[in-house]
Length: 204
Image (cartoon, one colour):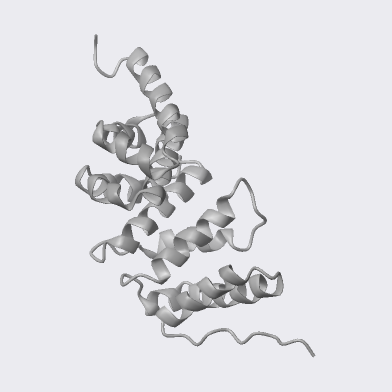
């Protein structure tokens, strides 16, 4: 069989889609990593068609979010460079860029040596001003909060890209909606960034 043929690419595309569906929990993600799935996904994210890239990056994002134990494997396989490139690739879909940025933010939350750049933070912060769509806003919030409460967070960067103001607005929004746990997580993130907690409105 000739490597890189159309048939091979089609098979890899099916594989990427299957891994996307499997990589939503810790056990599956660890199993995928152990079976060499990380390398397959990174290869598709780098060299696949637009659709294959989107599926592959989505699977990597699911895996990275669900299983921090896979982060080292993604880094060692060259995933950071591929994901960083996709956040700025003109031909990449918006979903592909967002999933790549989310992946990098989660990686940075557990790896102080991997700082998330302004592009990644800005891509996720932009979702906070948009209505929910297939969980993208929720997932962006979770990734941002994971980074903001980690030792990797850089307060100066968060101020520069508008992240602090966005977290303050989100804390107020979720508190007013009665989502106390989310509001508390926002407050924890703000404190981690050296900012005071958002003052709650009290009933008259």
